Image (tube, rainbow, N blue to C red; front, side, top):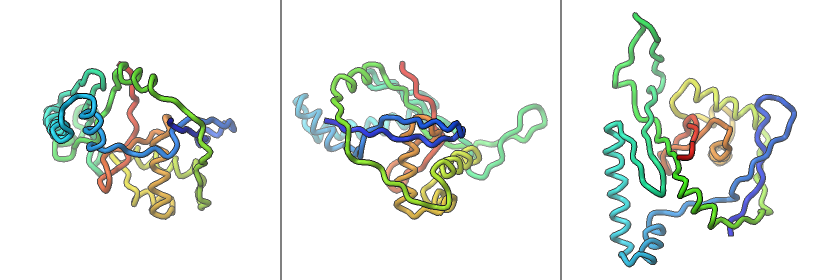
Length: 213
């Protein structure tokens, strides 16, 4: 049984209207070992072999996307690499005579994922929801949540990515509060913020629109 909460979206346009979105409550991560075990339980292959195949698949996907190609996995979706300008690099100006950026100032800023309809259908058929009693806690600071989100969005308009440390500097939040709030913004469909990377390498980038196949 999955639990959900209704989360209020900051009123960025100052309309005075309260808009809420459903989101999973306190969602956690299933790691590759758990996934491999589940596949092994129903396939007859060993969990170790499956884990090795998954890890190698990730490596080969990286090689393909490094060549500027998308990777389509039937039943899952399509992965497409996206480029971004390096941090603190001046944007290239359009038209003749404008300053051009060289390859050293451009790098992979994220991977866009377009989900396969089969995956959406499989998730929907298996998802049984129950409303959670848990409610998110907000801390009182010199900026309102709406102002902090606006600061983060503005920063990402001018930089390729945002870290928790940089968000702390922008907002004055402490480490845990800053990390939790950035993850919260990334969970909102209209916040304009998304997550890239994992663990200590996690960064926050401008959200790309995900469309169904």
